[in-house]
Length: 416
Image 1: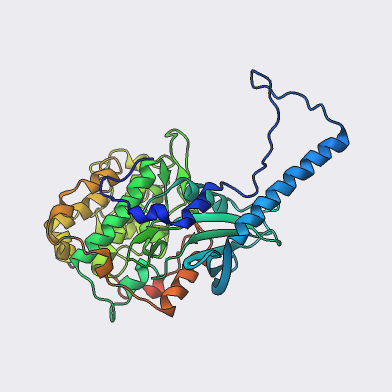
Image 2: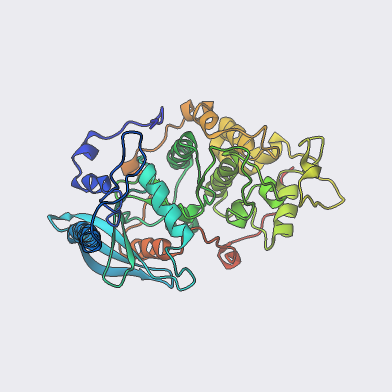
C-alpha cells in the first residue's frame, strides 16, 4: 500500500500488541479447503458420509475455537452508547489493561435474515484493507453467543471534530489549528483514493480524535471501491450538507472528487464554525450551492444540463469571485482561500484531487500547523459520550435532520 508523502509513521506503532490482532481476517472463516488436482480442479470427495460429517464438525469446531480465542483477548467495560443498530463499550486488552479499545457490538438486524447488513460488511471490508494513521483502526472482529458481531476498534477518547466546532464558548482555535486538522483529513482521503476507495460520507462527526490529538476518519458504511470507472454507482450517498452538485443532479459515474467537495465544506465549516451550505431538502441544497458558489451552467460546467436530475432556478447567479471568499474565509490567508475555492469547483473535472491538495502551497505558508499535542481538545465524560454516540450510529446513515444544530443561517449575498 502506498504511504502518504506527508506522513511519518511512528515507530512505536510497530510495538503495539493490538496490531497483531489484525492478522486474523475473520474468526468465522472456514479453515478447510477442498483437495484439488494438478490443474486446480477440485477432486471428488472420497469419504464416507459419516467421515464427511466429522470433517465438517471439526471445521466448525476450529472456527468456533478461533472465534473464542479472539474474543478472550478483550474485556468489555462500561457501556459508552446504546442504539438500535449497535451498543458501544469501553474495553481493554486482557493482557494489558492500559491498552484501551472501543468494542462495537452490532445487533442482529431482522430485515437481513441471511447475513449481516451490507453497511456493516462494507465497514469491516474497508477497515481491514486500509491502514493509515488518520483512519480509524479495526483491531479485530468476533461473534458473541447471541450471534451479534463485535468490532474491536481503536479507542478515540476526545470525541469528534464537530463538538469542537460547535463549542464556540469554550473551544478557541485559529488558522494553525485548522491547517493541522485539514492536513490529517486530506491525508486520510488521499490514502483512501490511492487504494481505490471512495468514503462517500465525510463530515465533522465522522472525524474522531485520538488521545494524542490525531484526527481519524471513521464510518465506512457508505464506502465502495471505484476501480471500475464504467460501473454505475448510486447518487444517494453523502450527507446532504456535504453532497456535491453532481450527486444532487443524479450522476451515476463519479470519482474521488465527490469526497474532495465534502472535504472543502468541512474546511469552510472549520473557519466559520457553522455548516456553510445547509439545505433542508435536495432542491434547497442545490439553491444554496447556486447562491454560495454560483449557478451550474453549460458555460462553467460543460455537460451539466444532461445530468438526469439537473434543475436550477431561472435566475442565474454568476460564479463567486475570490473577494467573496476572502471576505468570509480570509482568516486562512490567500493560499488557504485558493485551496478552498479549488475544492468547491462546480465542474468535477476541474475540481482539485486529494493528491493535488497535498501539493498545494498553503501547507508551506505561515502559520505552520499546530503540533498534535497542542491542538485544542475536550476531555472527560462528555467526549466519551460523543464517541459512544458516533460509533453506535448505523454506518452510512446520512444525518439530514440537523437544522437545530446550526447556529445561524448564512447570507451569501452579504459578502460580494
